[in-house]
Amino acid sequence: MSKYYVNKFLYTVDRDPELLKRYTDDPRNLVATWEQSMGPKLLNNEVEASSVHAFTPEEREALINHDYVALFEMGAHFFLNLTIFIGIYDEPYMEKSGPLSFQKEMAAKLQHWRGKDYPTVET
Image (cartoon, rainbow, N blue to C red; front, side, top):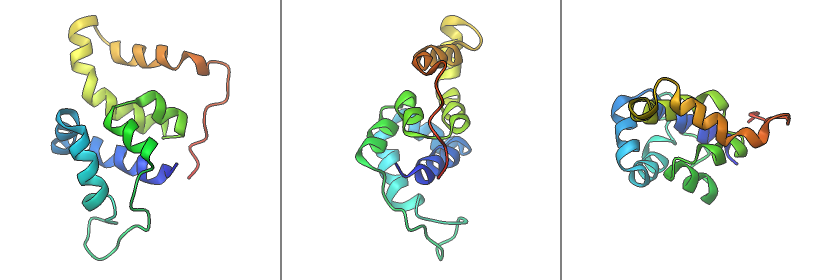
């Protein structure tokens, strides 16, 4: 897993309301666009570029499908993984089930990690 690239995606998309909306509405298109044109840039300029230019097929599918469990298991940084999906799912979940509903669901889906060492987030 290119943890750096996945974490960079999670970080940059979560902090840009327009990108987050695009990721919510059309994840396949946003992931492809980000991977090809936004992700390689360093320091938000046209001169410097990362040498990592692609997600693995598994990373791409997990990002497209908003599969936060798979991302966690591949070693995506837990906080980045959590915060982006709170940005996407918190309001709809809260309307249905109250405060912290999404966080509780995420915790439930990660129950099989209870008592185990979490995947490393080292890059």
